[in-house]
Amino acid sequence: MQITELVLSEQVAYSVLLLGRKVFILILAMSDEIINPNEHLIIPDWINVKYFEKVLKQDQPDYVEVLKFTPVAATPPGENFTSTMLRIYVDLKLKDGTTKTKTYIFKTMLPSDRGGKDIEEFGLFDKELLMYQRFLPAFEDLYKKAGWNDIQLAPKCLLTEEREGNIHFIFEDLRVKNFKNVDRTKGLDMEHMTRSLHKLAEYHAASAVYADQNGPYPKEFDSGFIVPTEKAKDFQLQLFKHKEAAYKNGIQNWGLPPSDAEIYVKNFPSIEQYWAQAKSTLEVNPNDFNVLIHGDFWSSNLMCNYHKDGSIDQVILVDFQIGKWGSPVQDLLFFIIISAANDIRLKEFDNFVRIYWERLVECLKVLQFKKPIPKLRELQADMYKKNNSFYAFFAVLNHLPIILFPSDKDSNLHSLSAETEEAENLRMRLLSNPSYGKVMKDIYPFLYNRGLLNFSDYDE
Image (cartoon, rainbow, N blue to C red; front, side):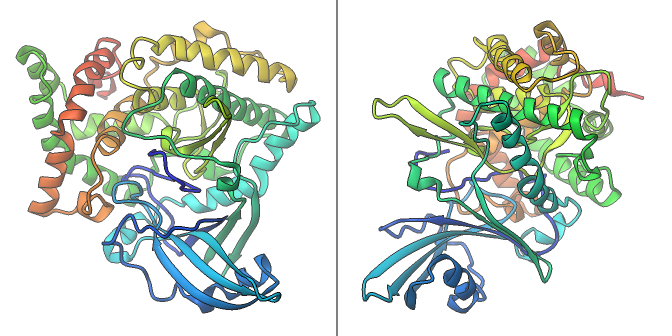
């Protein structure tokens, strides 16, 4: 995430998608300068003053007139692939004669002809509604009852609403507390990685304790990135087929020894192997230590604020649409691979697991977890299990090319999934990007040598 004044940065890969209905998020914010980071975004005309009247009356009861209403894109191209996100600037005249500017972040579904039709099977916002209405408040309450009153996992949700097929969220204004996003292209340094892993451990620990006390989570949390319906399967395999040729071409341009590149291309997964690996993520061993994973945990789905000396004060997680019940190492694999800075990603790989584990143990103990607390060797071993490896491959296949790609007007779900020459050229550009190749030159052999990319393991 780029250091910007975005209140919420919620980027999910273009093969994980949202519900086939209008859904949006409103976040209270303040800003003096209007910047449109994506002039190419088409803004629906129903997003207007009349639509916002109810929100304004609740949020600003002392306003008497809207002087100006300005909707712009909230994120640049390539930052969000599954929704339309807008920043709405509203200049208000108040009862005392003064004026005031309020800013909202508005989120809605993609138009049907721009990818929305393809994503109706994934039910992500029903899941997020459950998270903000029930589970996140309960998780934070567990810490309060244990005497840890300063644990905040997510933005405070001021309102959730379901009406006429729409889901609404209003969150606290994180920008007021100086929360910022971190540059996604540079990766996180050791301090950011450590604090982020600690926050992930806090979230995981609370989710495990909650399940122990209250029983299983609803069926919505049985799946995450992978949804096993036929329609969802067809869509996800189509995306894989679209990327296959571009990926094999990219491997040969990463600067690897030709013999290594040849091996990686030869052993690239067949579509059957890919789907078998993907489906394996749905297998959960009840005897293992399991949590409600975040599911899309990476640098753009967390926000930080800072002390005056530049050190991190707080870390907050955002985007709770893809969580599922499963091993915590699914989040760890995904996060470390695509979020750590290049100079520490592999060097500190095992240390990152320890950093997470130490905070996890601390949190489980303070929350009085009744089941056995996982040992570090058990977590390290889980990193290599067949049903977790998909998160490593999906990270480098799907997220990392987008993360390292410069902002581009064509970086959207429709362009990336279309069967056109332009779309194929874009996929080639993504996977042949020198910045991506430089990273993959180190990551791919690392994962391959650890057996995480042995796709023949999934042959029936």
